[in-house]
Length: 265
Ligand code: PEP
Ligand code: MN
Image (cartoon, rainbow, N blue to C red; front, side):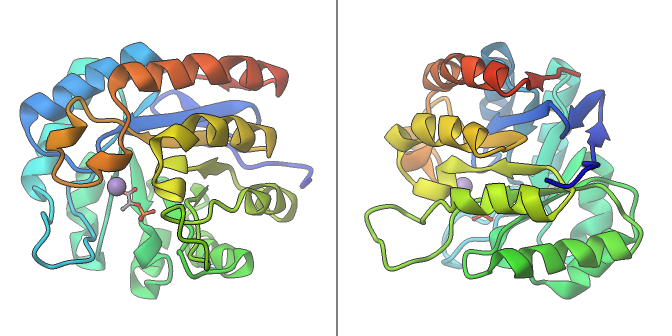
């Protein structure tokens, strides 16, 4: 374990060194009613951050691409109503200034972990970054991508394990929890886990959250949707708000055991 861990702070929340990030919300921002309702429900369940994609990296160009600027405005409205800070994805360097006007935490998605022009630009701004591990990237490559941001002058980086591609096809990805412990050993940065994309399986979210905390994670990110069957992306893996609340209640004793707390803004 690195002696001095970096604490990433925003909106009165501290991630790392005992402070836990618990981000929850839909895969995509779809409508005002959807995002505001979800924000209230995940806050009541115990989340301290709202997630939701406005710019979506979709495998098919015919799938829903996100509400873009309109989605960012809806996220800001949800933050205003609930007090929850927001994490949302920035897809390209050209969008960074716009997304940074709204996001408390800028997400770099798995497909962009080695988008070096984007990483370089993120190094030059004063806003924390959530760097998701690429699905085909090693632990060392993940740390080198973080280094692009850090060496540019931005010291606020949170890493996220979200599963990698392996021969196993029973789960959407293979959630590499050993990487969490290793990243904590090799780096001073906070590390969170996304068991939703990591497994693609609703029933695995609770056990993987518990395991992530035991592995040393400083936080979790979970997809939650009030009507998953109507979701425009990733509905199959999204928890209902009450299911998310159950997960939060189940993980509290594990957090306590590790001496960790969920701070609220
Ligand atoms: C997401 O969290 O919205 C997302 C697209 O995840 P990933 O980049 O890990 O696939
Ligand atoms: Mn998703």
